Image 1: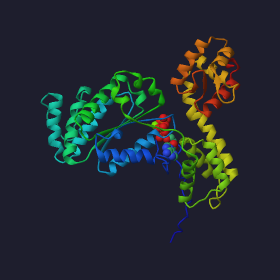
Image 2: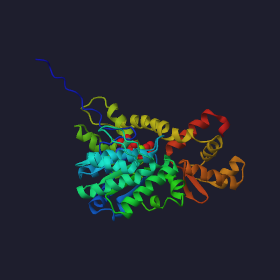
Image 3: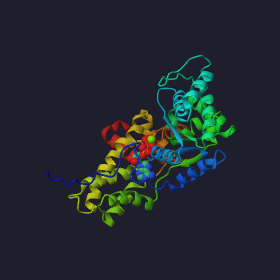
Image 4: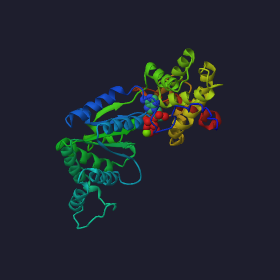
Length: 383
Ligand SMILES: Nc1ncnc2c1ncn2[C@@H]1O[C@H](COP(=O)(O)OP(=O)(O)OP(=O)(O)O)[C@@H](O)[C@H]1O
Ligand SMILES: [Mg+2]
């Protein structure tokens, strides 16, 4: 008889983008609203939902949870994200696959695709069905009809909506507008985007559908929610965390979901032995690791896309402790106030700054401030 080695429980935290966390904290209300919407039907305001939030605030994790909510009720789901291929074509192809799943679907798909394509093709099972973007509405209409008969629905999710080209967004929006709003078919819609979508797609007067979606802005989690998100996964794996360690961990995250996963993940790894509770010493070491990752992975992508002048603007803000006045920045850069205002707009849209008031700004995230500090140290030309 071999000896069964006792394996240490695996790290419960998930510090990577798009993954479902061990405990989805602080999202009960929006999930409940959405569950109510799909029970109620297309007249419910949350039937079409737009989730916004900075990188790492948990938009994709929330879309996953919304999909799970729909799937629990027997609904079909189609999920798409921005990519180089046409969004409407991909959704149409997935919708055809959904039609196939429904009872008697194969026959209907044939008829449906014939009418959609307007050509006499006979499709064998497993054939890829070529669908043009203009046909999305007709495929969704047919699917909506079948779903009504089957007494279920479809949840369509679109992630990274801010990155989808405008024409493509319009195609999808107009299809959902017709099928869900006008025909009252059970096709629910949930999309996620960075807040910069306010300045792009949402500012477009032809995007009425999007503008009318219910909103779920994802802000920081409360200290209590953060405590749960850190503590419960540790306890559920048979481990523990000291109260003072937990308090420091909570404070370090500022309620930012990605940071919560990073701190939890590194704290779990820092423990001297798996039997001892996580201590303040472990947490402090974990915070160093986590902040490093935040600078690289959250601030890095934003910083890399900025122009040299954008970066000089941010470096000029470092002299101020919390927020900066545009007049001061203009003086430090030796430019006009008007010039500083133009850069304020650019940097707001790039997700680098948060507005404080018309004349004041602050860093969107402390990790970006640290990124700017590192850059100023390495490149004296920036200051
Ligand atoms: N409510 C939550 N509670 C705890 N952890 C969360 C929560 N939501 C997300 N997370 C964790 O935070 C990290 C970031 O989540 P996610 O990838 O969903 O963010 P995002 O907003 O989609 O980011 P991006 O804009 O870069 O795509 C992941 O590690 C995820 O597990
Ligand atoms: Mg995401």
